[in-house]
Image (cartoon, rainbow, N blue to C red):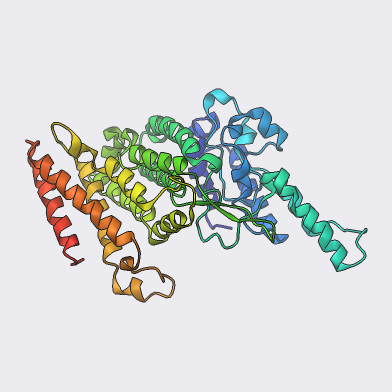
Length: 433
C-alpha cells in the first residue's frame, strides 16, 4: 500500500467530491471520514491478496447517467463502481442536486467482486471431471453478455479501449462524465482559498490542492482523449469480434470537447487570488506543459496508426473517423483565431499553437532512439499516410497564418504568426532540429 495513503486519499476526496460532502470542506478531515477512505484502499489490497487482479473494464459498463442515480447505486450495492479492483476513485460524476448518500461517493464491493469470488472459490460438486467444470465455467463467463458489468479488461487491447481507464468514473461516456466532473472541480476551486487559508499558517496546503486540481483536469482530458482512435473491447474466445472501433460521431465529439476544455485554459485555474499566494510565476508554463501532454497523447503514433487501420478495414461509406478528419477537426479548434476578422491570439493560445507544431514536428522527425526502439516498430511516419496528412495540414495552417497577418494589429500576435510560418517552413523542409 502507498506509503502516504492518507494524504493521497485526502487530496483525491477533496478535489473529486469535496463539493458534495461538507465534511471535506474543513481541513483536516474528520477521523471518521479518513478511516472510511483508508478502509476503501485496504479492501482493494485484500482483493489482491485473494487473487484478484485489477479490472478497469467492469465499472465502465455502468451508464454515465446512472452513477448519478441513488436508486441505481443502491440496486448495485451502494457503489458507483462494479468492482473495487478498478482504479475508479470517488464519484465525481454525481452533482449536488442528485442528493447521493455520502457513503455512495466511495467505491465499495460491487457485483463483479461477488462474481469473482464465485468464480475463484465456489465448489462445483456437479462436475465430475475438469472438462465438466470447464463447461460450467464457460456458462458463468457468458453471463457478461447479459450483465456487462461482469466483464474484465481485455488483455491485449494495447491501451486502445476507452472503457478500460484508470482514475475514471462513468467512462461509458467520458465526455459527459468529464463535463460533470469539471462542474464539481469548478465548485471546489471556488471554495479552495476559504478552506485552506488560516491565519499564521503557510499556503502549502493551498499550493498542494491547486496542483492536485490541475492534475485532475489533466486526467479528465486523458479520459476524453482515449475515445479518439479507440476500440471498445470484450474478451471472447471463439464467439465473435473482440475489438470494435468507437463510432465516428463520438470521436468527433471528443475532439471538439478537448478544444473547449483542454486547448482553452479553464478560467477557474487563472484565479489571481490563489496564484499570487502560492507563486510569483508558473501558471503559463504549467498549462503549456499540460496542453503539450494532451496533444502528445492525442497525436501518438499508435493512435494515428489505429485511425489509418480502422479506415482501411471499414467497408461502410463515411463510417470511419479518419486521420484526415482528426487533423481537420483539431486544427479548426487550435487555429480558430486565424479565421477571425480581427486576429488576436493570447498567451495561452499561442502556447497551444506552438505545442501543436512541436508535436507534429516530433511525429514527422522522430529521433534515432524512437526509430531503433523494439517497442515502437511503427515509428517511421513516412511508411504510412501520417507523413502526407500532417504535411498537408501544416501547409493549410501556413496559408491561414499568412492571411491572418494582414488582419492583426497586435504586436505579439504578428510576431507569433511570423514565427509560426517560420517553424512550419523548417518542419516541411525536413530538418527536425
